[in-house]
Amino acid sequence: MPSKMLSFSSTAQSSVYDAPSWAKTHLSNLPKHGRLTLSNTPTPLQQISTKNMKGAMKILSDLQTNFYMKRDDMTAGVEMGGNKIRKLEFLLAEALRLGHDSVVTIGGEQSNHCRTTAAACRMVELEPHLILRTNKCADVSDDVTEGSKKLGVVGNVLFDRMVGAKIHTCTPGEVIMPSALIFSF
Figure 1 (tube, rainbow, N blue to C red):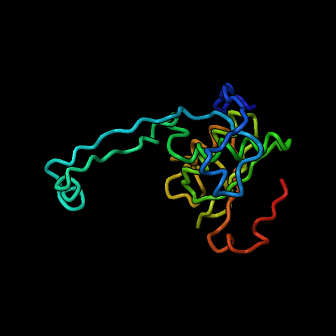
Figure 2 (figure 1 turned 60 degrees about the vertical axis):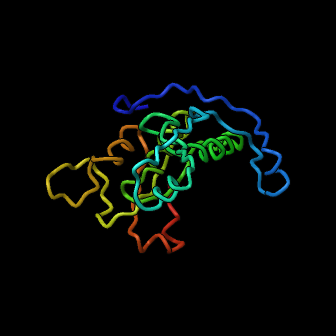
């Protein structure tokens, strides 16, 4: 790993996934490759007060209904917070079990999904390749000149670079073209 990348020590544990009984009877595509433990779960439920609310919340208050919020923003740190990490626990377990060394995903230029994927991949020693949709030129150099048409080093792109993700770009129009998804890495 180049020294300018963030380094993560892998604390991910792999385990067999035992789906809930309702899923076993109603779903046919259950995970077959286990699950990595990358998130802090279960996350808490937080009761939200409906007193003095307007709109839909007033209706709940009038009905004396309790309102709870599932705090999936607390699943992990800033690099992997939110519900995206839950799906990645299964996808990355499958990638590892099948012997893959890289993961490719696609998203918008400042994609939270791509940032989370890049961080999770590095935690389990997979190489993340991110295809970012952007109207900017395909030059992904670290140009930070004001007004530059290059991708730059801000927001999620900065974090993607810090974890050493391989960044590729395409325009929104290229996304729907099958040939746009053929890259040689």
